Structures are given as structure tokens and as C-alpha cells.
Length: 238
Image 1: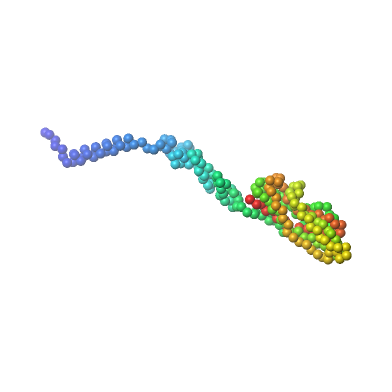
Image 2 (image 1 turned 180 degrees about the horizontal axis):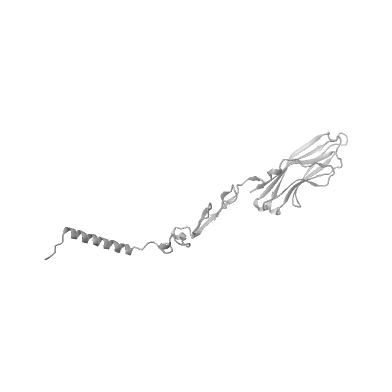
């Protein structure tokens, strides 16, 4: 007895042929090469997806770091660094650095008066502060102080006195003042002189752990003269 193809048999054959065709097409299409075996993705310690395949080239990303591209090489990282740092460019790459401008380095020793230096006194330190960072941290340093001189007598003439900004044992800048009177009238007793004096220091000339100082020296023999520093501030300049 001959079997006739029924409608159901025809549909079954067509479905089977479609499945075979689909399997053959899948076998012909190779997946893109990820740089390593597909089964390894996410399974092993050496799973870094190469940059050329759209990956980072590394298996780990350092927490809280900024990523920098590096052509065909693995990404680089920029750490946050010191609190308050910003991401800055040097024209070639990026790095974390402090904000530019002035940074006050010694706020805790800025305001108290120094001891008075009497007339004809050998140079002595009025204020000092030890640099607690590498000198190269800043491009320049600004030293600043308010200085005062007092004449408590009624007759003094042509009195000189100096303030010297020093670092370590090297003189940075000498500021000389001269109080001029006459042998007849002198300088009025009780006269006070006050001013802010500053010195700019190139960090290239600053040794490690420099002791920034403002020194004072009177050059007259009249004991009625005194001088002192009211404050001393050190600024770092990027």
C-alpha cells in the first residue's frame, strides 16, 4: 500500500529542513576574536581584554583612581593624592596637583610678638619656621613679617637697624632702615616705626628642611632703641 504525503508530513519536512539550514549557517559564522578563548572570559586571572579589542588591558581598576588612555597599552591611573588636589594638564598628560596660587604654610606661628632686640645687639632670630616639605614642592616662597621699632628716649641721631630674611645659614635679603634725627632736636621720645616687609625666594636656592628666619640687629649704642617682629608668615607659590 502506498503512503501519500499528507499536509502534516510536508510541514514536518519543511521544519526539519529549516533547522538543518540554520545549524549549517551558525557553523559557518565564527565569532570575533577577543584575544583569547571565548570560554575564558570572566573565568581566569588573565582575562584582561586587550585595548585593540575595546578593553582596558588590565584585570583590575584601582579604586577611586582616574583612568588615562595609553594608545594600545593598558590604561594608566592617576591617584587622588592629597586632599584638595585637582586634575591638571602639563600639555602632555594629566596629574593630580595642588591648586595654584598662595598657600600659607605656617599659620600657627603668625601673630605673636617676638622678644625685643635692644640697641647695639648682635644679630639674633626674631622669628623662625622650619620648612616641613620638600623645597621643590613650590616654585617660590614668600616670607612676610610686620616689624616694629621704638625709641623711648628723646635724643637719638642717625640710628640704623637691619632685618635679615634667612634660610638655613644663607642670607636671602637684608632690609635696612635708618631713623634720622639731629644732635640738637633728636627724635621725639616714644616714636614707633612699623611696616610690613617681604622677601621672595626661589625654591632652587632653598636647601632641604630650611630654617626660614627673620633676624634683627641694631647698629646704634643707645639702649633706648628696640625692635621686634610682630608676625612671620611663609607662603608657598606654585
